[in-house]
Image 1 (cartoon, one colour):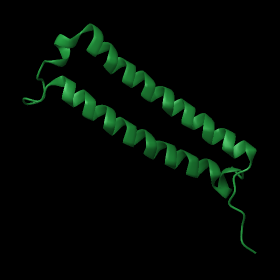
Image 2 (cartoon, rainbow, N blue to C red):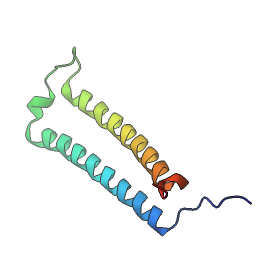
Image 3 (cartoon, helix red, strand yellow):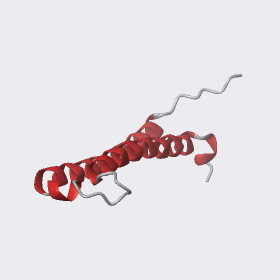
Image 4 (spheres, rainbow, N blue to C red):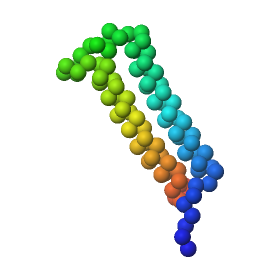
Length: 88
């Protein structure tokens, strides 16, 4: 018989908790960037990375952070929803 892969309420709650935690990490990073734009634009005009200004590097860093956090979420949810997770 085929195994039902639907997560129950507890697993869904854990996945939602992981998602919200990672969301807040990204919000913190994003608002840090926005705070620099608002209060210290002179810092963003510096060029510490071989001619690329900090504003461009920070923007790309936010994109990379979003991708990495999505991979972390995918792996964490796979662990939470695995059948072996409840046996540990």
